[in-house]
Image 1 (cartoon, rainbow, N blue to C red):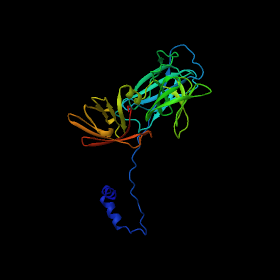
Image 2: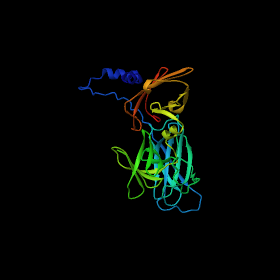
Image 3: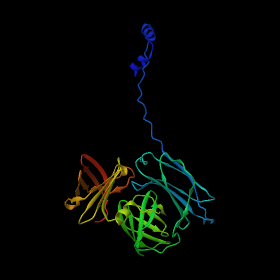
Image 4: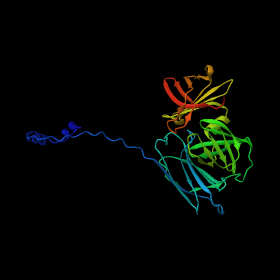
Length: 337
């Protein structure tokens, strides 16, 4: 830094400086490293409206979610309660670490009535920088009237930051699809609705669209109906046996099939997809070796809890993958025993 400063001074000034008497005590100047500029949060603002001439019942609310479609995750959310006159104005902020430049992003809006029934909705694609959006028209949700409980159907909820899907196979049980596990809870006596328990989970369904969830060592959170199945439930429905996801860069592994298994890899936040059709399952399901022309992957399933670095969920399996000359780490679980 001092050499660069000296070069910038005229030669005469340097001579004067050299001939000047030295100060009694030289002042110590510390060279300060430049501070790296932090990426700014992604700001999203707008307003939503519907054209139908109806008055919403008291207690209706509007849920706004920003979804990373490649990673299948909600990265920001807001709930507007006590809705008054239209339009409904909203503002969201997405942390820079959650906004991936290579991902596709979706703004999902759903207006629910007091009993949790979705009444109006809209989906809008997002491209950064987002800023102020054009007014968004909400359209009526098809079949938004009350429905009977179908034992084969999943009902989707957003419980705090967790996407939860519930299936009610009979009046005495609920099956919960959580990111880290699938649990079956039994019904117990309740003052209202249906309360389900197992050793350390509680799911209290007020309706098929409103509930509360209590997890081990966590506070009870409100669950609101969602129009989106979680990626774990969707994977189960597609017959995925094992699923894992990692960060930095974001990637997903899915193992599908029994007799002729196939490994699907989504890498670099969805920018690269590979299908490895030659799969050898290692003894005791300790991992696999998967090949395709030009690519070979060895994946080890380590029976140790794994905490996701982005969300904090703890999944039962630690995953290590060597793909060609690259190493990847992830958390995962078996979806089918």
